Length: 260
Image (cartoon, rainbow, N blue to C red):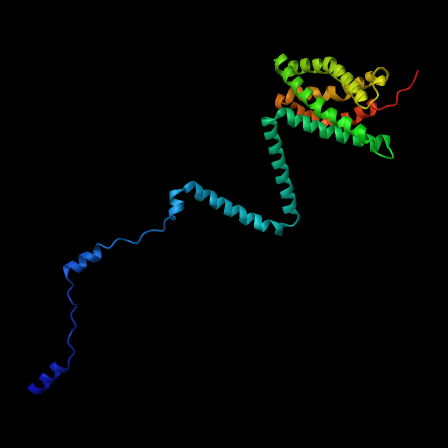
């Protein structure tokens, strides 16, 4: 029996005791710093505004890359963007060089007006390039700069606001400035075309009808222009009607003088 109990004690597994850890190692484990959260990269952390702009640019590039898949929608969006860019550029040019910008705009409109008059109304077999050049030159050198100075002076002369101020400007513009300016324009046009002897007969024949046509077209528009549009943009607004007026003026100024 004694031998059997001794063998049982020898065969029975002994319990494994855990190794005690030293206090030094345990304190080093506790002192380990916690894992760092994800942070911004150094450039983004240093320049947060630039990082935001880069993200916007990346988003815009992604949108632009996916735009062609939209088909015609992408083309129309590009057209609208180009038009807005042109308008912003034009308004900036008005601020920096108002006289030059209005002069060039007037030249383009007088050029288009004379071409329409020759091709659509007169139906000429061949363009009169000298006539077109003189008409365009007067738009560049006379019409644009003169209208800039006149509208600026008119806004300083009549300081009344509202409908009464618009009516006062309209009366001065249409019944004093317009008749004189139309006479000067037609006289210079005929003279520069090499026919100074026809200045007086041309004015006698076409000046009054030109003034009446001017009143029919410009009086309603100019009231709205003076009432709603700031002085800075009044010439720009008038350019929308100026194309039709240039066609009429070219037709009137180049009518053959009937000998009496």
